[in-house]
Length: 195
Image (cartoon, rainbow, N blue to C red; front, top):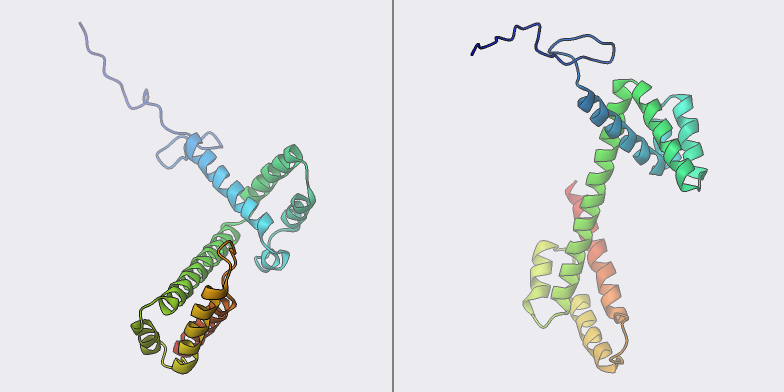
């Protein structure tokens, strides 16, 4: 039984798009991943407002393709248009791609921050409207500009509205909505003052 040694020339090295072999060549799988990533990026650009896309300074052919995708209604036509946008994205320079990714990351972070603020406002509203009398003091400790007297008054009004409300009503009492607005405005004013 003889052992065969494979020489370096027998090993298959990856090749890039132009057929060059070597360790720096990109595999076909990696190229496909990059193509799919750029197509997803192009899809995200279609959803953005046109003025945001214009600020990125894309090529005119990409702007036209995005505009056409926005008005395309048929599923198959839209799919083909999105593939075409992906193809055009591959022709764009890397600086444009980086600007697109940065913009989308900024928008996603901004959206997550807004959701966190919404949850924070809802939690404060629920705490203040609950039976805990220390919740108003805790809110004022966090946000000293808040009006203690108004918060106590709105809590009493909420309790009164709950007694008069029909059990089948799914709508929150008006005082709860007013309190949410007040809490949101107080938190935003505090955050703006901190900046």
